[in-house]
Length: 261
Image 1: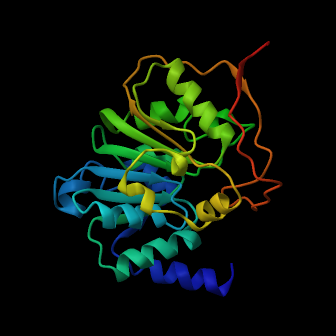
Image 2 (image 1 turned 90 degrees about the vertical axis):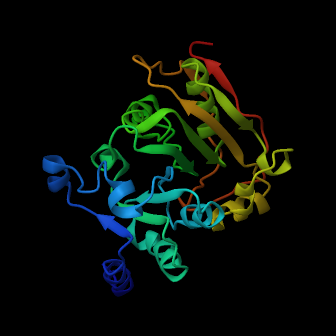
Image 3 (image 1 turned 135 degrees about the vertical axis):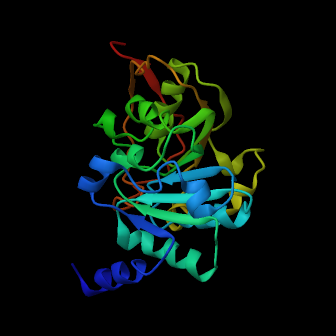
């Protein structure tokens, strides 16, 4: 590990708003703040909002500034990237912002039933070949339902045609109520304060002519989940911080086809 990374980890270890736990400890006891985030950390009863795969934490910090009446927790395994957002929150003295360094797969060890109100999925890796690893898959939806309040809200913001189309098909297959569905967010009539927040890569994609998709829906506590039976065209470029290589400006309409067609 480089000296710069070691310095960032050492600095974050001094922050009261940054948490992590060894998996062996989580497996035995769960995280100490599980079910107690309101009373023991935030010390209020404001809604808790998670940003999963928060990266540098631009959205966690930005949302925390825009909505002081809510509490925000950014979650990611990449501590070196998280350092930027954690430091911004520290310097801005945001008492409604926290960060947790862990894998999303372990998230149920950190939050209790009905403890979370909303989830943001901001530019997640579409995992085009691995369904169970997609953060909007039915696998993860079942996981989120264990701690999200009934009819809790999930936001997806993505540049990926594949990720948007898959998630939309998953929502339709399971009859989840759609609140907002925008194929080209910044060229739509949708008005919201969230539009003022853009990550570094998001701005870069917009400049390359890529449309930003936004899907907002309610998560229901379903007994059975249906995985969408469709084939979706793969993205023709790499994005989401996975070595940005934009071949050309892509504005194509996402396509989904029933398997076998």
